[in-house]
Length: 491
Ligand code: CO
Image 1: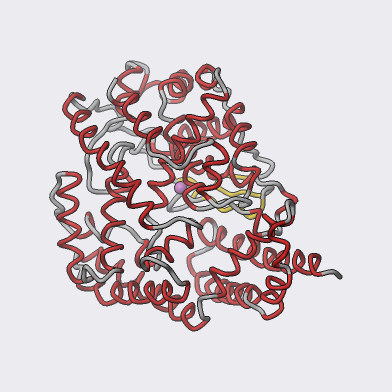
Image 2: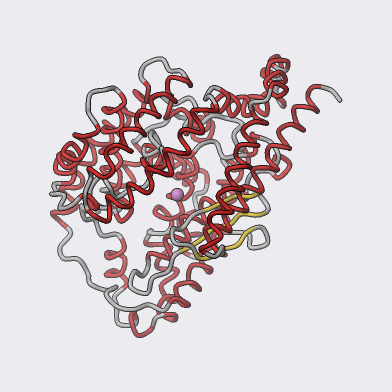
């Protein structure tokens, strides 16, 4: 077999292992009985190790070297470069560091859970120090030019630099702070509509209707329940999403289905002939998040789409909604309110939560801030950005699981996803002059096709900043996002 054939085969073997890992993980979070945990953890650890050893094998690294000339080839180049990026971010990290991290994660998760329950940061402090220490080691192994944060960010957002993120976040901050003040000052009292039970079945049916309208392919995917909603793409033809339905939190489940549905359309839209290749994956976490936020917020929380869903909602929940004015409902689901918990934040304040985490992570990694001083630093920044006092650690820096999983450098991808979503959508509106009217009629397929053609079909042939330029003709910019927020919230 020629070198290229061997290279394709080696990737295919790897993807088959990841396919099995994904099925086992999905099952673990949906249907597996509680006591299955131990055996599942062993299988998953074994398969992860197997996949990693294949990826960093002598044979594969030789193929990467031997095929170097291919990178300038028009068709093979993008396939080669995606595999190489994937190889380099794994191969540079020594196996003992990977094992040490896995052990540290299990300890840190347990410590974090206890500290959160007991409202006592000191129970987590040692483990968190260890996580930052390991993150720094990982950054050293990966290599960086300016600062260690670059290396960690680069794992999630290939080609992006910390100083670019800093620059773009500063611009966003400058626009958001006065915008927030103005919106809050003019918005009146919060409509109290949802403080009652909405049946689980009704909420499930509404979510399924939205998924069907946006073009989620149920022959290539399904929705189930889990404790925290997530998406796993096992394959473009087999994409699993989950939801959480609580009778008291309507309409959160609708937005959750739209969010995960947005992730799922991306996975379903990647060409299936790439299923066994690194190029057949999403371009980055931020690009992935841009798809979920676009559907959840820009489409899902728009007046056009909610008006379209309104008769269905009244039919499903007549007792709760038939006497409600639509405008009041629209206001309630787009209510802006500085709050302490990131995952409950509205569109305007959400990014402020990300700035806090990004700035603190970066300060610790640069040695400007000690882990033991994190709680105070956190509380100060929450005061500065959101004007709130943090009453207890579980509502402060212990709220998110990310740091105990060793995911440091991950948070910026959420805000970058918001920014990209608006930039992509602004271009879609230019290309599709009838988009608003289509959405008002529930014809969401037009938008799905545009996203598929412009973003999904490209897999990871391009790195995120190249993709943004390719799709919109412009560099990544906060401008469309700020315009979107102003148009929506100041009118
Ligand atoms: Co998401």
